[in-house]
Amino acid sequence: MPFIIALIGLFMCLSTPADAQDVFTDFENGAWGYPRDQEPSCRNNPHTIRFSQDRTHAEFAWFGPMTTYLRQQKSSAGYTVISHGSDRIVMAMDEETRLTPQGDLVVWVLITLPNDMYCWGRTDWPSTGCLAIHVRCPELPPIS
Image (cartoon, rainbow, N blue to C red; front, side, top):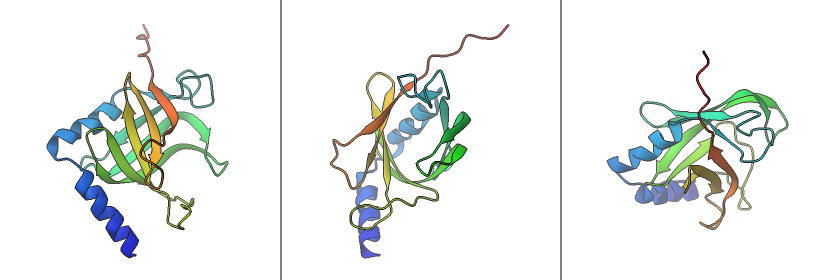
């Protein structure tokens, strides 16, 4: 328990006030997918990201079902927002079961990258640790 309190305190110190709200808006604009032709790519199954009005919860919604790390088929995933900065949002996945080497539940960091991309880090990884790079999908032409 003291570790979790210290961790939350650390992330609150890292968060920035009002100007960091743009990071939420940036993630909510458009759809996202893997850059290559994989299951959740822009072409095969992109996703959107939405945040609650109070910025305490995130919902990732795929256009169709996708396979989770538990090998389940789902089309959405929820996260509790812990903190944020100008280029990242720290979140705990709802129903997370994975543990860090220290035995704590994994806490994820959604990190913005240049050129309309993002990746995932974890609070127990070095700050340079980043995987699952996603790109903002091109806008679809209007259907007439």
